[in-house]
Amino acid sequence: MFLPPKLPKVAVLSTAFIMGFVIDVFSDSYGLHTAATVLLGYARPLILSLVSVKGGEDLDEISIKQLKLGRFFTYTGFLCFIHHFTLFYLEAFRLNEFIDTFGRAFISTIVTLLLIFITESIRSNPKKR
Image 1 (cartoon, rainbow, N blue to C red):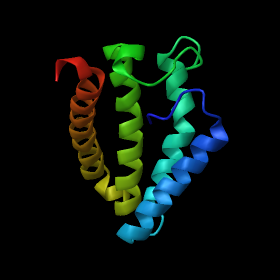
Image 2 (cartoon, one colour; image 1 turned 60 degrees about the vertical axis):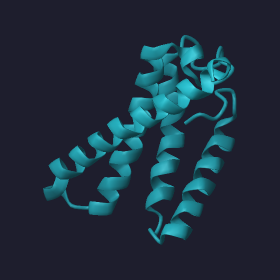
Image 3 (cartoon, rainbow, N blue to C red; image 1 turned 90 degrees about the vertical axis):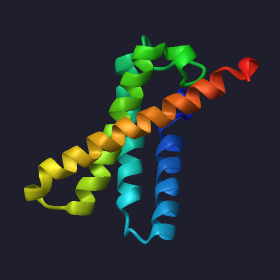
């Protein structure tokens, strides 16, 4: 999600695959994380083109400072929800649990966005520490 915007798609998808695979190996989840992170890597340029003027080519990094607050949370919110929904839906793999899965993904997205905001505020204000 926070890889450099100018990174080639092959590098983004390869990084997503490796990261998801490593998580799957250590959590014994049979490819769930790999699928979710590769989908995240695939959707990243599409969401970036929605929130950035030139599809991310004008950005040096993904941060609140570069994208401003609204666009940053639109970007991270969409990508977090896509990742969480994919992960939880593949885990449940039942349509009769759709509402529960949607709720879990939504709540996890809110918590993740809160943690991202805290991390981003600490990272972007090194002078105030």
